[in-house]
Amino acid sequence: MTSEKHASGAHFAFTDRWGGVSAAPYDELNLGGAVGDDPAAVRANRERVAVSLGLDPAAVVWMNQVHGRDVAVVDGPWDPAAAPGEIPAVDAVVTTRRGLALAVLTADCTPVLLADPVAGVAGAAHAGRPGLVAGVVPATVEAMTALGADPARIVARIGPSVCGLCYEVPEQMRADVAEVVPEAWATTRQGTPAVDVAAGVRAQLARLGVEISGQSHICTLESTDHFSYRRERTTGRLASYVWLGDLPGSSAGKAER
Image 1 (cartoon, helix red, strand yellow):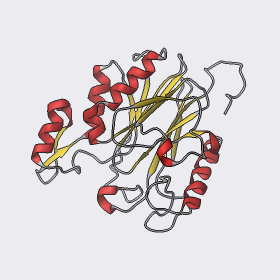
Image 2: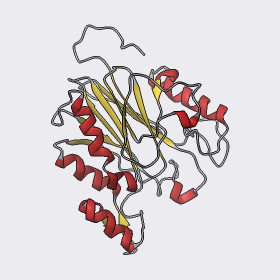
Image 3: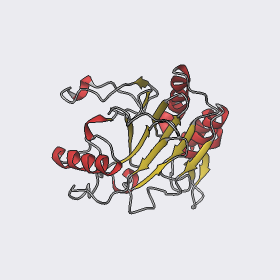
């Protein structure tokens, strides 16, 4: 797992697959609750990560991801007693609550973490190929802007995902994606059609005036330290987290969690 506190007060963290309690094929640190793993193992894994990051395990916002573009504004986690169908189906969440961690689950898709520490607004988006085309990342920035964020101030991080050299797709699919986001057009090492979702995300953010201040070099399909749906099909999920601490120089105490 990697964790970083930006000078602005924004926190970012990305997990790998090690250090958890899940059995194969979800070994070890599976954080996805809808992939067939033992729910008790998933809860234990989520608690381990939260504690290691200094977060309250009960105060992390997890999404019901569906490869769309809907965004939810949140001030706390969903009701833990709610049935799965009662949790809104969204692929991005934004918050103005400092100390509240937003989490994205992936196993090849692109996790996008965003924060404007001055305005006190954070956002997290799940950008797979369908979400890229649907515009989930621009929708997230739009929702953050509506809460007072300034795209020019947003600190952005892109986490581990399948790279454009590995994400092979049919020729027509590549054409359809590139028609919407030309920068996502790619070719594999074998010369076959591919899509580069992360490149598409970078381009969408650039058009909105958001500068990428960091991107993982890890390709999940190539890295056996990370879960990859395309490589393994039945597998676990990684998590990427973003949250805001106090403003630099603030004398306030720890944010409420």
